[in-house]
Image 1 (cartoon, rainbow, N blue to C red):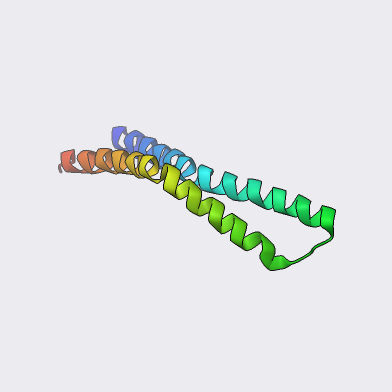
Image 2 (image 1 turned 60 degrees about the vertical axis):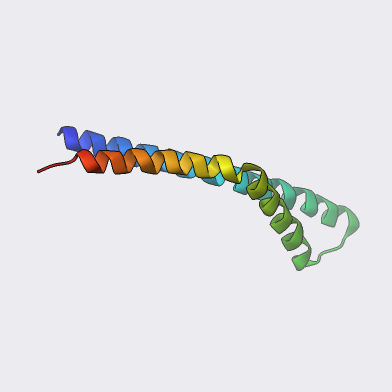
Length: 90
């Protein structure tokens, strides 16, 4: 039963790590999309491709600014998982 608790603990941590990695990208894309949508509604410019470039630029900026910390978070998690795998013996 201890193995099941460990597995569930790592599954929970994996989901939390995934949320922490995806949140900055998704939130920046959401914010830019909201601002562009408000501008489009105010100016009656309904160009579908207008939202793509600002969102892409915002995502690139987030990855440049936070990419190192996101990779550090992911590598710390993977090191712990691989260390735990190395301790498993039959």
